[in-house]
Structures are given as C-alpha cells and as structure tokens.
Image (cartoon, rainbow, N blue to C red):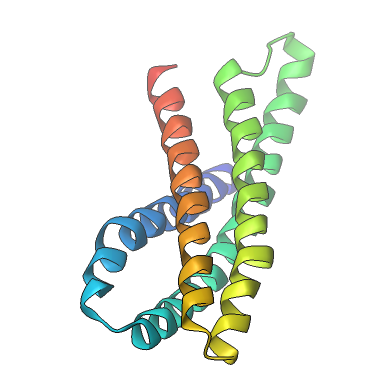
Length: 153
C-alpha cells in the first residue's frame, strides 16, 4: 500500500513539473506577447514564483519517493539476485540532472529576474526570462526523454 501511495505521489509530482513547464513555454509565454515589458516581466515573475514553489515541493517528493522505491526494490532484489532495471537507472540519473537544472533556474536565473523586477530594469528582466526559457526548454526535453525511456523499456 505504501509503495502505491509513493508511486502515485511520484507520478503526480512529475506531471505537475513537466506539464507546468510545457504550459509556461507553449501557452502562457506566447500569450503574454501582447503585453508591454513591465507588465509581461512582472506577470512572469509572479507566475514563476508560484510555479517554482510548487516545483520545489515536487522535486522533494520525486527525490524522496524515488529513493524510497529504489531502496525498497533493492532490498527485496538483493536476496534473489535480481538487478535493478536499466530504465530505473536512466530515470534516476536524468532525474538528478533535471533537479540540478531546476536548481540553476530557481536559485541563479530567477534571482536575476527578481533583481530586475525590484529595480524596474525591464530589459534585464527580459534577458533573465530568455535564459530561464532556454533552461526550462532543456529540462522539458530531459523530462520527455525520461518518459520516452520508460515507455520503451
């Protein structure tokens, strides 16, 4: 029962994270093109603040639940000589990479955006958003690769 709960939390957190990145990149960001830079940058700052709060919780849940599920599998498999599935190793490695990219976006690039909004430097805010977009796109790609690997293996 605990395994099922953790797996559900794990998947829901990933859906929030990957789905949120897709929403921001492909729907929200293009829709904001009609706004003037002060409104666009401020709105994206506010949206990302909320989104990053949710993703931070999701990252903790994904990491904790993933480690627990892998440890649970390993403890049962060690007695029978069964090896961890290669897809799990790929998923874990790429998941850690996603977390590192998220950390860079959240704690470096978003800080630049915060400073730009606080000082009303809209061009700097736009540049920060551009950097965030590139890294979020990379993270979305990694997330989709993980999903693809799991679907194929």
